[in-house]
Image 1: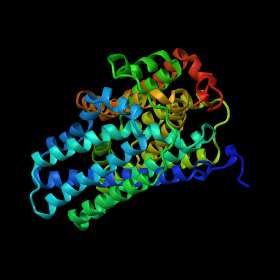
Image 2: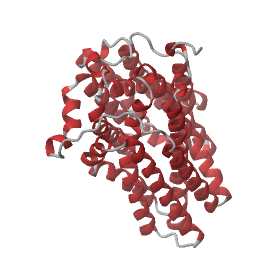
Image 3: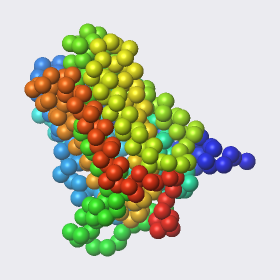
Length: 415
């Protein structure tokens, strides 16, 4: 007899479809990290251009922005499992193309950017489908547990993936891309083995109103609007990650190995909290918990900006990662629970673009401010701004703040 869902840290894994999805998602995220690190290193090795490094991120993000009205609608109108599997196959094709260019010594920036555009298109379609598929694989009572495991999976891939990518690339670019290709293939096979889950599919004709349904739902549902916009502005202002190389070299004088420690610290904090949340789920005061998490993220950002010692900086970054995971856990669970299944893909498409935009614009904000006023003031001001956002949003979205348990509202429970 299994323990009750509320006390079962592995509740989501009691459902075999979710277990396959979890490992497929982990392999895909891990392979993506290997690919990103390998392409960046290889591009810089071949061109010596920092500008090209910036273009790598841009060409992968733009498809999500340009296709925002299409990708979410596709995830709502078609089988999400098939979409995710097809995207994994396309990822494997991109990894295989980069492997072929490397083996034949035909690595050329224009061709690589073309491959990365295709990879960006794949990610644009995969993101809303992946985010929307998870709630179809577990009952609502186990969804918060699934969200915690999803987050810990992504964080683990984000920490270990770049390190593994660096080591594999150090051995040989061919080895790195080969592992990347095999992981994407394995992920695709796992997704294809998932039985078709129940899903509410919209059969209405595609119109402008149907394409904009995600935006309309978000702006009409204050809980979802508050959760998504809170993430947008908190990350936009708290973009200290982009300035880590400056702090590692010029302020903390740690060198490349120190930069690795700094980059890993937020993920370590996030994983610890994700594991704790999977074991001890939030039962009461979830809204308050989320806002406290955002506020602590701001505090950690300020501490990192002011620190001149390595141990304090690493501790501050761990606090940032832990606090961010706490708030993300509540936000993502609420968005999943409060969004009807028939518009979930379109809502998640908007959410993922907002997340991507906040990361990109957050790095731009941090870099621009650092250029004009210095890195320390830029980070400190951003942290104070994040604290202000937590207070303003807590006052401006009282319904979000007063949410107690992570449960589906009555009007959305019948699915």
